[in-house]
Image 1 (cartoon, protein in one colour):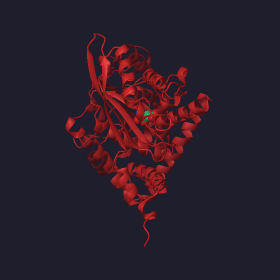
Image 2 (cartoon, helix red, strand yellow):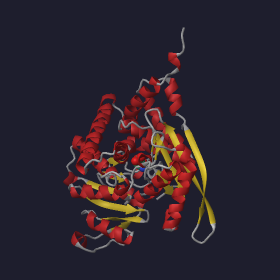
Image 3 (cartoon, helix red, strand yellow):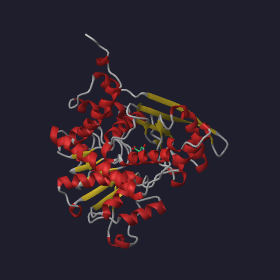
Image 4 (cartoon, helix red, strand yellow):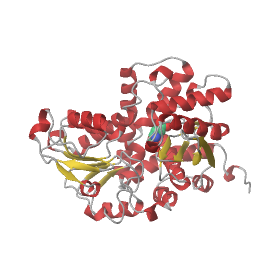
Length: 434
Ligand code: GLU
């Protein structure tokens, strides 16, 4: 699902263009701006792993703490063949703004390993995950930098990482990793949090725009944890989900898909292309097989890119027909495409707001780990919904008040909080006397 590699080389500088656009609308010291233009620490490590056949393979890994002024670094760890330092830095940049936007007491961080995890056995994956923690152990901690799942990492991997860090520290350190299994101190609702958060933002925003679920067609690119759960929630709420896809391609049915049976099929077979007519509503729905590029260009009301970054660029932005885009993936639209979409009057609801449900429940998990007091699923979902609604409304209001696009409004909102914290720590102005 990756677009050409050339657009990947400058991910961080592309990401910071959004920051530059927002700076016009905030009162922030030049010291704070200068600090936000560079990651605080970038760690590159080599991870030697003994493979099952006895050979030794060395993998590249990264951990970047972009900023920790508002609290410890926070962010996931990605396993993907395309992971690079540039990508991890931009993901850490987005985490910084995401945590500030949601008013979580965290800075932003991210990690990754350049690997195709599907090529490893479970034992190799465990050795790799533990090796990664060995390599970055000095850079992470409950009060310094907290790990979480991201693309192709999950609760089991988080459990290994937490255990490895605890072995190194010779004490149980649950709060250093979030997104763990419940039995290891994970939080209820963490697995569905990104989708639930996105669902709340979609409901809040579409209500303002006066779109009715039953009359709203939706296409979802990416059928991983976030994309498939969200497609299920939207389907249940009455939206017409007409297309979904995974990395191999997608399916399209103008009259609407039966998401529950597609999820069941995908879970069993791990593929989507083969989803034709099986059971329930599915048996009367004809699916057309489409490519990811075709899915992005469908004539739908709402488009949800929920896969990887750089999916909508200057190369295909002009083809987009959806009026509303909700970014569930991190960075699916690059800044050149932002401009083209704005000219077409497309409303883009940005990643740092839409997919912030994941890190919000990660925060709840960290709080629960520290206090030893565990909340019910109802409490989690209610607090998540409240937080997402408040910040979505606030972002919308800023966009209206300043007549700016919603992405810029989200950055303005986050920058106000970040700037305040950076300035409170001390800027040049406080030390210069005339
Ligand atoms: N990987 C998720 C994100 O990009 C979650 C991060 C977290 O829970 O710390 O927001």
